[in-house]
Length: 293
Length: 278
Ligand SMILES: Nc1ncnc2c1ncn2[C@@H]1O[C@H](COP(=O)(O)OP(=O)(O)OP(=O)(O)O)[C@@H](O)[C@H]1O
Ligand SMILES: [Mg+2]
Image (cartoon, rainbow over all chains, first blue to last red):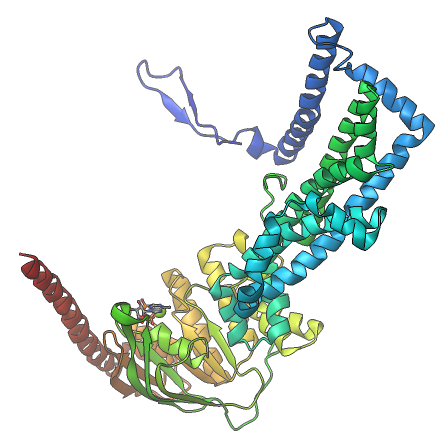
């Protein structure tokens, strides 16, 4: 909403001109401008994916791409509808969401607690950081056999896998966030005589929370990635299972149904977290609709 | 509209600074920031501190506030309550995640004062500092001077025994500054407490204080310690009296000698360096 400098030629003197500065519509009717802006933003957010879909549809209709390998969106939609009415899609979606949410919540909680502790104590940091750094680089899928031994072949290991993956992201983000709380903020607490818990509640945690939230949001995306892979390896249900088993049976349109639903799940999860962030961290300047990682 | 707790007749909150020094850094990067300083502040006394920039005024205040420890020497505060201190920081130090009212109530929250009473006392100070309409705003919506006033309100609301003020009026425009000086003068007369007040304005130092202390260039020592020759209650009219001008002049002469010398040694140091490189 740039302020408009209108340089308009006027009639009076032949050579002279008058520069007029006046309010634009944004100033005269801020409410309406805001509404229109929101409308435009929403239209873009929906319109761009819709255009891409139309392009895809056109591409298969005119045989630019092989419809058997890359079924048209309408085909995928039809298959999706079938899967919904049969009830299997709901079941897969529910199983996957449950694993993602549980794993994400457990991993975030553990990562936040350890991150806060390690961010606050340099001794603890020295003691644990090398070990955790080493574990961090181990591919988490490689841990799956070990998790089977511990949690058995079922839900437990898949949730644990998501939790472990999420844990590392949140742990690192939280530790960094706590350590980078400016000393000036703590000074205020010290002078006014805050105890350890008060310092945490009033100063350190709110100062670190926005950055912790970024970690949790990144971790949410990774959680979806990991669960799809895990379901492919061990699953009996879930979206990952749907994708890879359909692929093995050459049911390409069902495979794409799985991919699309996974993508939608990711979008939904990220959006919910943004909303949560707006509610929980109202002091953060969310001018850009809270996006940007 | 006095919601500030009225203090018992005997005042508390005296400060003894004994032979305090502070250095920063190690080895070749070591900087002598302060001292040795000796300073006694009686309970209820208002002491202004002036001195050249970088001489260690903030360092002294931070040491008294317990934010840094002296490198040597000793500081003693005689206080009664559990939360005897409040400080107004040179860079405000208010919290972006708290609304204005919550920022101002911060000290009371720490003290465990019930929310309702805390809100009343915080609002009272916001009103006095002309921020009544901004109780619900976020700090990023305020101007610099308004944030500074939030910081002042936060310290006053906590009703401390010892109040440390590090250039609290520096970010304010001249008119507002004069008004707040008067306000602070009235407050400190109605409800005396121990105040250490750092400022660069000699007139402000004299107007407000019982005593003015002039510090030397870094490492700051105390060069001059003068009682202000005006009783209380006093009004800003004392600025026009000859005694005021006399004291201001004495302080200025001392300060000027110090600043001139500091500039001189810096030039010498620069000259010496270029000589050495030749
Ligand atoms: N944390 C620190 N680390 C290193 N040096 C410091 C630190 N804090 C202060 N100093 C040094 O100590 C000296 C005194 O600093 P201080 O902030 O006390 O000055 P001041 O008298 O408050 O100055 P001003 O009037 O400009 O605010 C300065 O030379 C500064 O460089
Ligand atoms: Mg200073």
